[in-house]
Length: 150
Image (cartoon, rainbow, N blue to C red; front, side):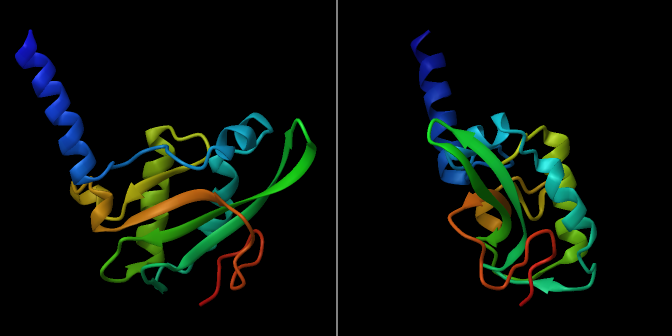
C-alpha cells in the first residue's frame, strides 16, 4: 500500500516537472466569466480569421475578445486573450487553429493551455504552448474580435 502512494506521489511530481500538458487551468476569474456566460467557443470566430501562413513567436498575442461578467460588485468587462508561451521557434496560424480545436475538444470551458506540438504526441507545455486566459487589459496590438497584429 505504501509503495502505491509513493508511485502516485512520484507521478504527480514528474507531471509538475514535465509540465501540465493540455489543461483547463487559468485565472481564478475564469470561473466567474464562465458563470456569466463566457465560453472558449466565443474565441473560435477570431481563430477562424487567422492567416494560416502568418508566423507567431514566443510572447505574441494571437486574439482577444471581451466578455461581460458579473460578480458581487456588479457588472464588469473581462478580456479573454490567446497568446504564445515557452516557444523557442515560431508557429503558424494554421498550427494555432489546430491546437485551439484540440483545447476545445479536450473540454475546456473558457481558459486553458495546449502544447503547440500536441498533435505530434508532445504533451509538454514547456516545449511551447497556446494559452487562453483572462488578462487585465487588451494588449496594445490587439483589437477585440480580430487577430492581433505584430
